[in-house]
Length: 269
Image (cartoon, rainbow, N blue to C red; front, side):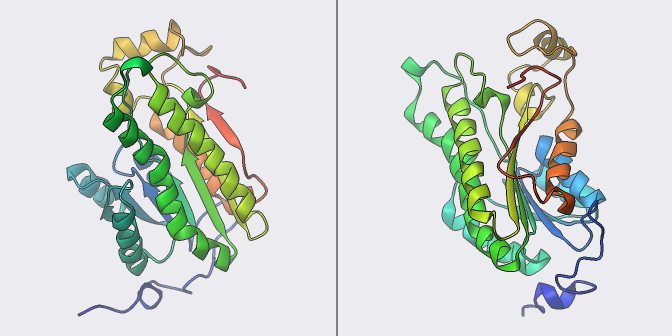
């Protein structure tokens, strides 16, 4: 037997906003790719700011662990699957309420020269990184427009602007995500909905560790490689999450269609 809808189960006014412009009390935030890396760090920041958080990620132990640690609601889903996204959005809305903030942080990376890029691999990278963000945004944007408030923050990459060999699928997906972000910004501009992208540089995440598994490799990349930065540092996921939170706040209402680079100066477009 189903319980009462979210609006009858949450404490306080269903959509009332009791916080100030620098917090998210009374708001609901969903994070895709929220089980690890930048997604998990962003979810932690949003929760600390007072938001009720939902985590959308592939089924696995990391999802449960992250949800328990953050007091968040987990939702297992492959964002590349449109039908699965629609079902997940319906179920998660029942539990947390519809999202006021959506962070699209789900992403994968595969490297190959263009001349030998496998078709299935190419399609999978774009399906997760770009189409997946579209699936989730499409499913929740209408509600944001109706309620007159929304924050969409997409995690792109500096690779979208400064490419390197072997990154055709990843760079293309992230460049597409930036363009998608700007379209959402235009469509939400008169209805209280903003859309922005955060473009990380070299960050110590599971995605990066798959390519550079050792601390030494990461430090070398930060100091003596095409993606080195003037500060000579490897960023932590929380460094990017801080930017995500900033763009999600009510006070950021006039920041939209922008790309915020968080890269210790590696790229200054």
